[in-house]
Length: 225
Image (cartoon, rainbow, N blue to C red; front, side, top):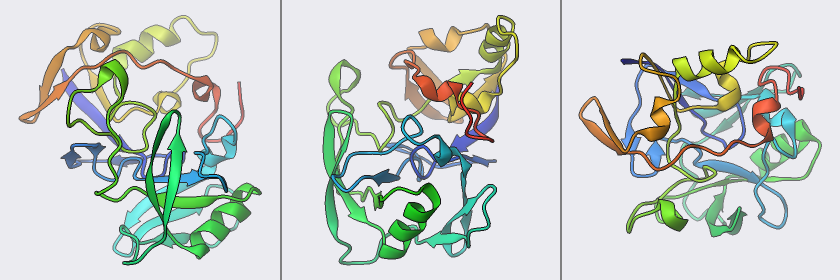
């Protein structure tokens, strides 16, 4: 059994980035879902409402986080990895959780609003913003970023292969937006893991991931089906 790919999704619901190695932090993988788009009321925006988020491609550079549109000829947006000192705070909501985000910049808000044809703000979760791992999943002191519920999603290639064996048309792993993909083992065995170790880093299995309609969105075309 071995890891075949690692993925981080810096901006919630945008495309992911494949990395050869990544730092693991308390909230999950470094920079995973530390940014999020919200509406004017601070409510999070995802592919459930705007599938075209999948067409926005992030990448890391020496200048920070760069966002490009897969198809449209928009100038790339560069976002500092940390907002400037004195950045304005905004109370945001993700599902039933409320926490504090920092507004990134007016330029970022305008870029995303133009790309998505809807008014929105880009917020960043600073270290001092604490979102506890909620419900029966969490233990005291455990925190999460802007991910839907848990810090990490692990999927085995055998699980996807088994699923595709039941489908008329196979789907790629990108539909499920995992953080860690591994080869070896039985289909779906990761659902029963209570604890596991990768490169001397210990993880706790929480629960199988309940899936939403995003798995039905083609991550390259943003089309449903």
